[in-house]
Image (cartoon, rainbow, N blue to C red; front, side, top):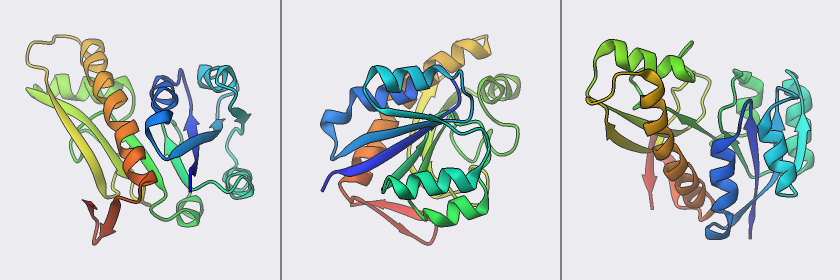
Length: 196
């Protein structure tokens, strides 16, 4: 049975686009895109792909109700710049995944989002970074890790260049993680994810 996917975005939605572009490879379909910002370009990407696009500013109750009404199987945070309530997370246990632009547990948690993550990596002088797809828990960026991929950044001098390199990884591993979920190949046990 094809799984129904909702993608939550706050900005341009390039990760959303990578999911849309890979939908034919997975046993899932993006049926809903929600943004907490009414002018987010991600909403336009959804409309261009004939996907329902909805703006809900910051009302987790309304968001939960909408997702349940649409019978969503998987919620994907793709550049969604809002902290979800514990109530929201408990409504979809191990059914919410997030993409984070670092190798968790490095450069994550409160305040670690967008370009700030790459500025932290640059300031710390790390030679490698990457991206992580993880299940969402009540701890910010603290849920079980599904997939990580590494890239070298020792040759880069600007956070924007790191961001660009890491984004290439994000566009690869997020659709891959969604595909695994839709094929029921992810098992969570004691905060660890096994890929079946």
